[in-house]
Length: 349
Image (cartoon, rainbow, N blue to C red; front, side, top):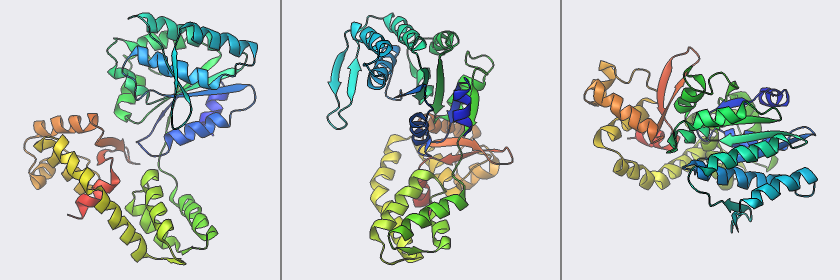
């Protein structure tokens, strides 16, 4: 695996993928499979809104991962405890959550100190920071410059910077004017190979005594746009309701039920958006993929107003993570709707 090879060989890596494609699962699997002499630490910073909350997420992740039995581990955890965190336990998972009460401007110093402690740890440390683009929303200025200044001085700690807002991750790591430019390897997670996915799904159905044809599986995957989350969601529903044989009628019935259940969510989208944004979202959903959203043909087909209006709505929908941009195999950029169920619902209207 390229990601594992990069990290073991000392290269930090940027990992991008659209939401719910399996990125987080891949990272967690990798951290669990690190070779001897390596320690993996995972933190999701999407809920954080400031450097102080980033410190809390980092302290929690380190506290939950580093064993206290060893002398180096005890030194790291003693330092975190010296910050006098309030420790509560999640009632569902039982995992600790740390909250450090620091004065304005102190969070940066403590983040530097925590990473400095990990630099002295006797094992190689891999820190995976999920939804890294969230730092662009922090009120503190030049957060990426601050983090880059620390990270470039570390030799024992390597990072996975992952994110689902691809346009923001590209700004952080592919813009020559940004501090993280060309500082890491770069990997993009695409959809699972269709043939391998068919074999995987067929195995699980047949293992429980359900007969299913490859053509049926392919039709289900096409409906779910080969998007991991939606493929698994549909397969789970079909599996739960399956008899001895699984046919097209059964999976289409379950797909229709999924859309019906989600209608209230789809109508909520309308309430959250302006009239122009809603119209553009519907248009992109109808098309599936839109390569030229400001073209005269596309705008007139769906009565979207002016190109300037479309551009403003396009930007707003991306910020709200209702749509995303990507490239096809020919290198052409397109826009598509994140929610595959919404897309199918609109296409049925």
